[in-house]
Length: 360
Image (cartoon, rainbow, N blue to C red; front, top):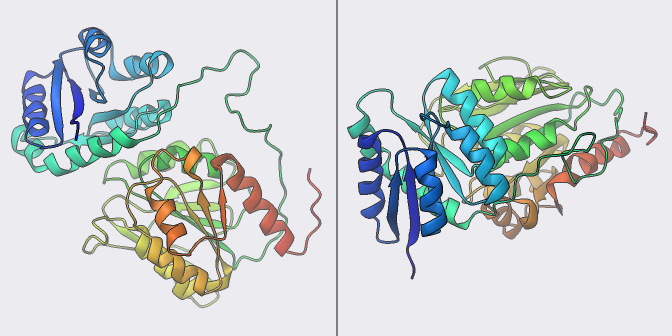
């Protein structure tokens, strides 16, 4: 079996050395080059043709975001960002995911040597995932051109739907952008949306803030005990599980610590199990792009409890693992391209509410 050929790009000689060592310890991968800045990296990529690169966010001469933007336009390839655990680091990392980076690893704030060694499993797992990911060329729209190949967005009015309906989203690798694509197309009167996206502490708040500025619905990091309201989306805080409970006539968010489930915290399994147990036929499930099988069994429990479930199709996924597993478990009613999920979801909500299907 051929090894995953990796190039490390980081301005720190120590980090380059550590990442090279971590990669070369793996039997299925090899570091074929280490570059101190994007200009050196550009020549390495041209000459060595790696399968994956790890890319530092903040570097001299050209920062990682500028380099990534050029790379994804001219020679798209799998990139794992190496970020910093700061507010600025989180914002820049989210921008990198928008530009097409497959995933990211957060550098420890202190003790970089021991810290990176402790992250060795996460780093190498993400390189493996990146090597298999579907990477698309970054398209820069011309003036007056839509930046998406999907049809022009139609403004929907769902009307006053029952506040009983809840939408549940599970996602992992590639999911930050897939979830954004769904949320920006939901109208302001959408039922509440509850989201578990595999993401570490320190990044989910920035992610929620970014989405809140783009969407018609309000988006926030979930807070334990708060009421789950229509027209709002709630994102599981990194490092905590999110579920829903019933309190009288209302749904409330339950944010709790606990052991990882399916190696994840937050876990889609935890969220979807609560959907099956508490919401039943008033739940709608969406399984978006991601590696592994987190949430597949619980999504089948949702279906058995009367929920209606969608999965993102393989062609539009960065990684088809989680949707594939949900489909194999018999949990899914419809498999759709990402661009069609929100429109189909809206049509289902409108038709099942008994309202006219007129659009405005």
